[in-house]
Image (cartoon, rainbow, N blue to C red; front, side, top):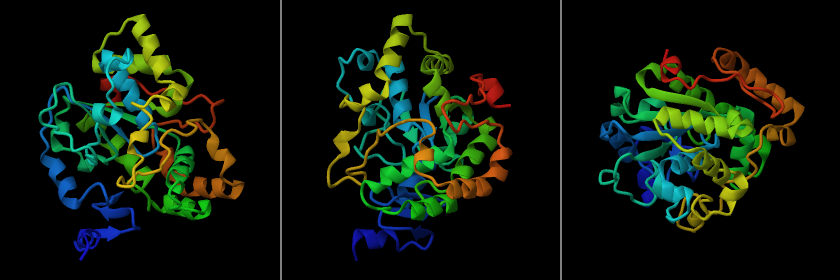
Length: 313
């Protein structure tokens, strides 16, 4: 019996394809996690000054990793430290580099795609901080398709489109993820940010994050963060472009982590019929969310408060 076969022997799991398995309501990478490792996170000890970046996949995760790293670390801003984002902000559920989380100095920065009910219970103390980034789900769908299609895992967009609507993709249903985190926001110390707001006014978003984290930067330091967080700069920065994962041994091999990063790119891939079907499936539940999503860069997304108190009311 191979390791892969042993992985799916547990009846509590459901195999989706050669890359994903379903456990406790979400889909996870089979080559980078296990039910035991996910369960162990429940008792992971949280420090009061821990910082978590939490997103649904393809919502600007790496971008946010870089922004927060630039805010926290002078050596990242002035490029005197050659430390990758995977070291700066390791994945909680996918510890690809086998980082010793316990020995890391404070403040620790983590990244996760987990739903609210699978993160460490210590986060509910409302002392450690969570930055949750939202993005319009049509762009997420198209970005996810291109990310997965690099490995020819989803050759047909129509097939992937249906899988996304059914929630049979990495992390499961986008609606479940966003609804869950918003519905339980009062249990956490959480800042909600829009990807589209960050695209339209990155400097304001950087200042929001600084305020939330209690970090004061000079005008020049803020300028440096904004400049080094530009997509074109990140693509050529070996610390931020994730190309160091391009090996045959990695589950994420050959995938493009930084592609376009534009708002409204879904219009170049989705047909009118697909867009209408998407609206039919998502509209009712999305209308119950207090967020005004931006579907095109020309639109103005409704501002989300940067106040912890207002976000948690």
